[in-house]
Image (cartoon, rainbow, N blue to C red; front, side):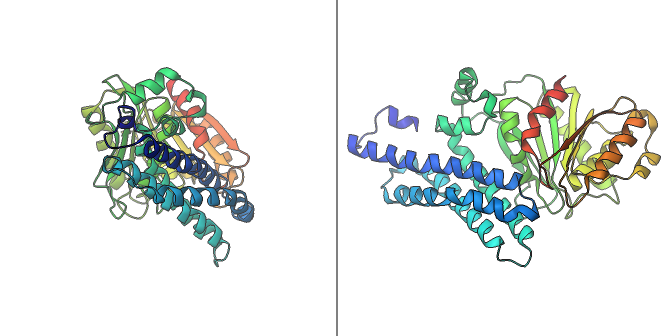
Length: 372
């Protein structure tokens, strides 16, 4: 809230102190709550759901207390955007906590918990504009190993909010729409050549939400991200050309508007999105130089219709959870053997405590692999 540093006309010191106390009293519990909810989503495994819900419950009461104190304050008009996003993120986070708690009472607790994960993602998105206003929030949206990078922090705080074609953007990709796409271009982008990451959501998912699985990593280690939404409920696995052509067009679109490194164009995806990264990314005309499927289905017969030259030395970062209940880890083990035997350069990552969720902590590893 930089305006306060310049002295607000009409605000007494007591009033300013009250605003700062209310801000601290809400923002810190909010960040703790968002972190806890993210961990709940990451560790969400049906047999241990009750333990996960119990572990995060402690973060709900401090957030509710912070919300009550925050809303009791008379906020000046010029801080409307700040209060709007703070209140929105808090409301969504509290609804996510309730959703996790209530999931245990549902006939299908895991499905109810996945809905709560969706609310947590919405809360995470709603709080992001606060990163331009408050340094602690800006650090929260960075990977832990660069949160003390003073130069990066300063670069982020110096960004002109009116700079076009940077930040989080959406094209015909509201939550109720299919076939659009969302993007993230680091706010401090100045025309340099960057890798492109195209990240595909899982079945019944949406690019607008899946974008947030990658933002922290790409804000820390600059790359350009496109998170498209499938035309139908999931990717066109039975008719790959439908969504494949859209992906090709999006790569071309990125190249027309930003400087893209042609040697580092990654197609990645979760679940059905991971499966489609195989189906589309192994095609001979694919523009993607690297593939990184996660928790994907795979059948060796797929390789029988793939041009063998496409597979030669193709970098593939294959990750799968040992606890995956939808696609058993044996599927990934078989894919590793088949793809390696066919000539691909496979980096295989079997993650011991991962169920059928996306491991965001893997993103820095993926980017290091992509860049080297």
